[in-house]
Amino acid sequence: MRKTILGLAMLIISVTTFAGGVLTNTNQSVAFIRMLTRGAMIDSDGPYSNPAGLGFLQREGLYLSFNWQNAYQERNIDATFPLFPETDHHRFYKGTASAPVIPSLFLTYRKGDWAVSAYGGVIGGGGEASYSTGLPMFDSVVMAKIAANPTIQSVMNLAGAQSATDLYDLNSSMKGRQFIYAFQAGVTYRATDWLSLYAGARMNYFVGGYKGYVTATAKPQLMQNPAIQQAAAANPSLAALANQPLVDLRLDVDQKGWGVAPIIGAHVKLNKWNIALKYELKANLNIENNTKENSDPNGALAAYRDGVNTPSDVPALFSGAVMYEIMPTLRASAEYHHFFDKNAEMANDKQKTLTRGTNEYQMGVEWDAHKYVSLSAGFQLTDYGLSDEFQYDTSFYCDSYSIGLGGVIHLSQRMKVNIGYFWTHYKKYTKHSDNYNNTTMPGTNIYSRHNKVFGASIDYIF
Image (cartoon, rainbow, N blue to C red; front, side, top):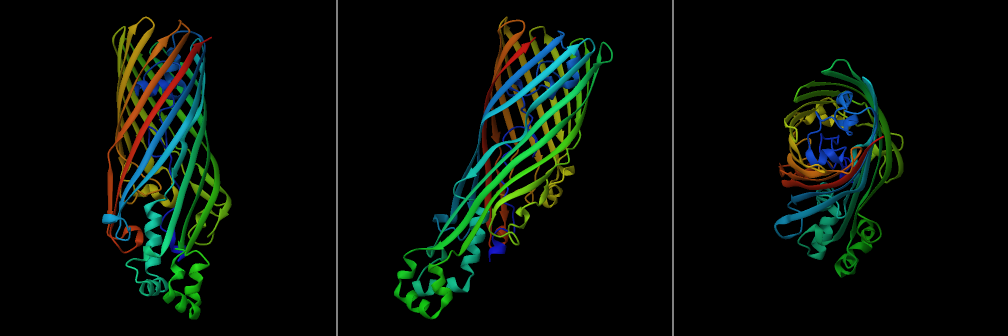
């Protein structure tokens, strides 16, 4: 029974918390979360959002931008399954993912037609997800297997129980953490008065870990039943119920891996128009296990044996953006992202179940309301190519729209502070199955998420 408990899924909890594709975060700066469209802007956050545009920075010198973000997300599953003992066989599972400190640093040095830039931050993941009461995909499989066990059926008859769940206590807890740290460096060359080009690369370093357990033990009062005590005296399998768990699966593993993504970009500046294109190639990334505990290394948890490698590529990204200066104090921009998720290798070729890559559509405005204050707002629509086969309790996504608000305080000609707030409304995703988690019984999961991010940054030109 142990080998079938978790065989249908992997104990991986995705904690990608922010804007972007299924494995990538695009909110690398506070300027982004207050406006959401930075792809054609010429500013200190350019080393990530618009590196080609750095050739058009107004001043020569060293540009520094230090950013701090605080993010929180809920990942909820509203599950219905016939063996859940609750009224209407319904359970609500709440997961939380938090990242209290997400730092990022941008550096640019411009001299003449050349600019050298660097960026460091968290390009993917960015926190820890925790389900303190477990997940329906584990609970339902454990319940189904226990209910079908002949020994349990005998105990049910002896105890006069209406359901197998009356005989045991089920406990489970799942936690996962993921951070993809990134360091990017590149060179920008202003080829003409209107064209600037960029070439660079980003080093992605994955650090993560997963820890969880699923246990089922007989209720203490079960063996106090005289009929069961009498039967247990002649049947060792019944007697064993009081001395050992029905199920006891445990995993504690750390994971690391790295990959490099080349990046190219171009920026065209024509009077009041700014147009930028950027293409990030796929980063081939394999994650290696450093396993501390694995209760079933040759069965359900074979993928987490010590030293096993799992693919988790960072997908290629194409972005195109345009900005128009409506008046000297008012700018509007629009942007498009496409993540080539189907071409990024994932564990068990999960990427093949996607219908297409992720599309993002963004628009934003920035207004210089005062000599010392600028205000901004933005909107983003994220549309994944999801399918029921791609969605799992441990890793699910929902189409969404996001709104960003904030502003800039210009402390001097060389120093400014960005402040932004970003929240996301997710569309619920309903997955119904006639063979819920391979239990031969029907079931339904309704996936939902809630997200909010706050951040502040300080920019300085030396």
